[in-house]
Length: 211
Image (cartoon, rainbow, N blue to C red; front, top):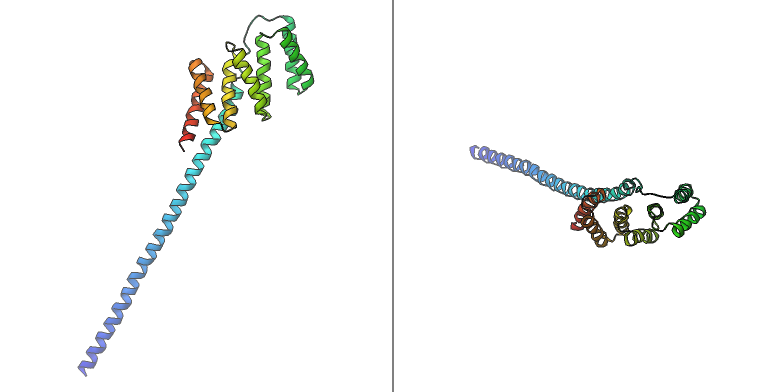
């Protein structure tokens, strides 16, 4: 009888131990599963953060391009101009701002014929180039900016034209030419406001290029 009771007790203990082991291993399996899920979630979040960072840098670069085109509208270079020269530029500017391009082109052609070395004429070229950028007519915009850079390198707008040219290249995703123009601008006009903006553009382009 004692033997039967002893065997029954041992069997009960064995079942109890087996049940306890199953209970103790179950939480371990759950913890491991939760850890795997957490790792996957963290990896996804890290990937999302990286993607958002890259998109933010690209947006910063685009916004800088837009702001630079607005901020480089410095006061028109003050030189002695004739009454007729001022009249023609006023006619051009009024028609250009009102998008009356037939009239503005007529005034532009007259300025080019009568005052081809005028700072006001160079300003008119720049405004035509800037409008082309706004319309995403980048080939036309480059023609206007290159004309200023090549034919009027000592005029105030030469710096603005170089910065605009670099921005056009950036919008066309031509990063190397854009960097080259920015470096050229910094080298030629190191103390100018345009050079400071060029340095900011260049830093962002270098950062984008590393990714």
